[in-house]
Each structure stands twice: as C-alpha cells, then as structure tokens.
Length: 253
Ligand code: NAD
Image (cartoon, rainbow, N blue to C red; front, side, top):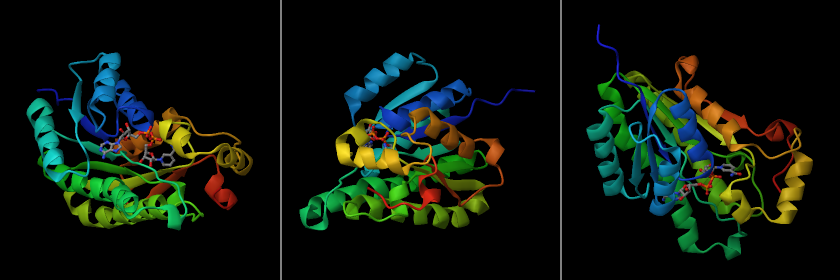
C-alpha cells in the first residue's frame, strides 16, 4: 500500500515570533511547512536557518493582497500538492487612543488582521477540500474580549477575527474543515517590544496569575493541537493561552 504524503501547513507571519515557532513545531511533528511573510528578507533568513529545504517553502506575500495570496496557495499546490492546515498568524498592532489613531492605521490593522485571514481562508479552502478537509487556526488575542484605552483598532480587528472563527467553523464543518482560534496573552516577541511600554509590561506582570509573559513555543503547542487529530471533535473554539489573565478578570493595561 502506498504511504500517504506528509501533511502540509501554511503559516502566515512566519518570519519570526509566534509564527516561526509554529512552523518549527509543525516540522518537528513531521509536517511540511509553507512559511509566508511580507518581510521577504527576514523570511529567507529564517528558512535558511531552519535548513530543511525539502520540507519548507518560503512565500513572500502580503496577506491582505488577494492576488498574492492566490499565487502563494498555487505555489503550495505545485510544490506539495496538498494543504492540511492554515494558521492565520500574521498581524500588526497599533496601540493608541482613538484621537491619535489615524484613519489609515485603523484601516490597515483591519486589512491585515481581519481581511487577511478571510482572504487566506477563502483561498486555502479549495485545496484543503481536495484532500478531504483540514484545520484553520486563527490567532486572535485577549484584546478581542477585553477593551482598553489604547486598542480601538487592534482589539476590534481581533474581536472580528474571533467571530470569523465561529462563523467559518459552522460553515466549513460540512467540508470537514475545523476552525478554531488561539488567543495569546502577552508574548515577548518583536510586536510586544514595539507596543508594550515599560508601564504596560509592569502592569501585565502584576495581572497575570502565572506572573510572566508567554513563550512563543507555548503558543505553538496550542496552535498545533488544533491542527492535529487530537482535536478532531473540536471546532469553533477560542482558547486563551494567557497564563490565567482572562480567568483573573483584570482589565488590560
Ligand atoms: P511579530 O510582529 O513578531 O510577527 C508577526 C509577523 O507577521 C512578522 O514576521 C510580520 O512581518 C508578519 N506580517 C505583518 N503583516 C503582514 C502581512 N500583511 N502579510 C504577511 N505577513 C505579515 O508578532 P507576534 O507577536 O509573533 O504575533 C503573531 C500573532 O499573534 C499576531 O496576529 C498578533 O496579533 C498575535 N498576538 C501577539 C501577542 C503578543 O504579545 N506578542 C499577543 C496577542 C496576540
């Protein structure tokens, strides 16, 4: 009997941070991975460092550009011939009060964090369907459920993505495609370094019951779980991976 080809994952925003850790987790589990990012140089470097050329595919692409996303999925089909998981991880953060949030920033945050996952999902589904289904994992945030003085754009984009998760879970179940979300608390990536002021950082440390930021690898574990057969009966769920922050019910810094 011929052996089935290894499973394939597409991880967006995979040049660094949570996305890169997730790509490495898939590889460690024997999957092939298409790593997609808008930052072409950083992506090339990350993929070179992984040094698994037969099992990886680097795709420079903006998730909010429909034509580019379509070309990326076509490249995955040509290279690997299947797609079993899509991790909508690419995201940007603008933390500012309403009056200091430009119209352009608000629109761009929605475009990348919400339209991006919509486009990637829509484009990936036909290829997933060819091999009997798959899994989509959206990376939301605790900002999707907690409001603050600084996150009118970011929090709104993530709340939209949380709802898109449930919407697609119901709609795509008929195609055997499960859709879940992972909602990270603070993780010390380049994004956090950009938007977490020393005050925000100190407040988070006090507010998180486990008393520390999360690690990229801890997020990758939860993301992988939702793509693996271990979660075969779970769809439409949003899992907070946040050291207990949400459970403690404390406001966002
Ligand atoms: P990061 O900034 O380190 O990595 C994000 C990656 O996405 C970067 O490599 C970037 O180049 C890429 N990207 C940005 N815009 C893109 C676009 N238009 N098309 C393709 N790629 C694009 O961030 P991270 O902390 O690893 O965040 C990953 C995800 O986790 C994001 O969706 C973020 O909102 C979410 N998240 C992060 C935290 C945190 O504290 N770090 C908390 C909650 C949620």
